[in-house]
Image: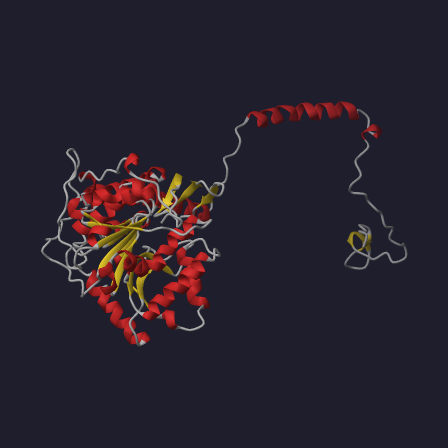
Length: 475
């Protein structure tokens, strides 16, 4: 309400202190536009006052432009915590690298593994009758077979028969004192070291005492699968070449890139029989195949692309059931649906109409390590070498990383494999393999990625040359 300084006072008389409500005169509303700018043109001297105001604020704006900018706000607690976490991770990484280098240079991994006494013979009837390797293609020209057999004899303390199945027997004669033909004329117990001496200037490797058996691969457009299928015909190939092999009831197969680093006497044989006993109680019959699980053989218990079983080390028992299971495995493998024998084994077990082939047993994973596991966990190096070291990249070691090459070099040094002169034979001493028709074929292997696994070109007088690419998984 409007202020009336002349309203009535406290005593009812008009005065300056009185207030009254003027109800007779209506209140006029005045709308004020707050956004409207004042019109300087209507004021006298408005342009001059605008110039003076601009000149007054100009020094302040100039000084503000020259003043230093304000510092950024301090980081939040979350950012500080993240920075500390990254710093701790980098410190842990540096310490881990230092531990790896220390383990490779100062721990017992660099110590030479002592060779067990050779008089501790492993009876054949208590473990296995023979150890079998498959050496095909370019591997026959490399020291891979000599390295594997040397490690098995010296550090595995195996004194029983060793058989090398190969399609190029001339390349492996420097490792044997008897060929398969000469051994066929001897008794089954005659595997003493009656060895021939090598020529002057070469190391004496006759104590390896391996038997070379030539395998003629069937004609196939996939040479790689034909090589892998030999694993499924171990008993048949041995029975065909060696008369005494029919008496062998249990054999152990090993990939040529598996190096034995510990004596089989220590714990492996005991663990093997414990595994067989548990499997027999579970399946109510002896297992036809004893081998390692693929994932469990790794230090972390998992790997990308792993299968159920690892076929690098297998112990097979002769029986009608086992021969039938091997036949099913070979059929799935030769079908060409799967590139590896391990995948074919898994599918064969899954597609089997009965559970006859499910009587299998898994060996304790502590006895088999892949070389890349020593990169994953420093504790694996501090624990020392296992019974079997699977060096899957031994045939193309120069393509691997620095730490992998360092670990394999330490393994060779600790096993004494670099001091035996295990040189590959000259290529001129190796004759070309033969196919099922008896025709000689020339193989030009460009690269090798595993035992008998490679990138091959075959040239023959018959069909046109074909090119096959092998697959191998480096572990």
